[in-house]
Length: 226
Ligand code: CTP
Ligand code: CA
Image (cartoon, rainbow, N blue to C red; front, side):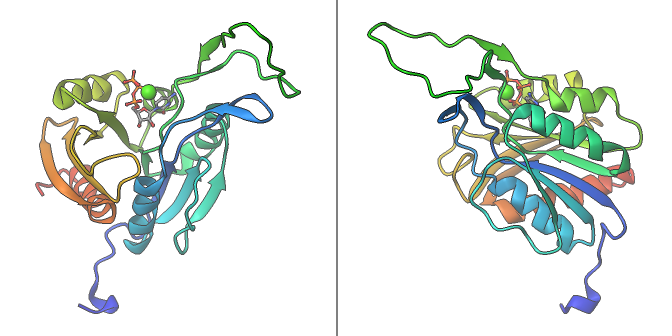
């Protein structure tokens, strides 16, 4: 199959993808984060671009090269990501939130490096904004896809998040499965659609999974069976 014959199913579509972890500083040299490497989000951006989409990738701090043709926006905190995503949202056709966003941040970020003392130390944390929930609330024409990483009860937790955040689909990574999730090149997952349809994906490369997620979403958007 040569390049000329490939159908570009996302031609003319605008796709927004978030990737990677967020980082919440307590002082200039210390922060809270998570082990997300950004690989799933970058795979989605690469595949969406290959499928003809105009791709915007909003990413936390990761050590990955930007896929060709992708418009990359770098952010650090959950609040930064919230601002960047909400700004891009109105122009988008498909939005995929594969970032691992911090649920909590330190209540205070100190300007100067903290000094240790002999006693214990407690950090007071407060909630960050739920970006995806806000996208669900403001949804107009957009097709909205969430991600979740779960160790158990994938289907039940997935359905709860799908409904609570007003999503069109959710991809739940089974992080209890060997080789799946954070820091791996492969994922085993379950994709649930708001129509009730469910697809189970065995362990596969993140690029293969990205392609399936995008293709299935296009079918679902058109109301076609896959
Ligand atoms: N998400 C988000 N903003 C947050 C937290 C999560 O946009 N502040 C998004 C993630 O990018 C993901 C989806 O919500 O697409 C689900 O994230 P997850 O952590 O699994 O769910 P939570 O709603 O945060 O619930 P919990 O962590 O308690 O399971
Ligand atoms: Ca969370």
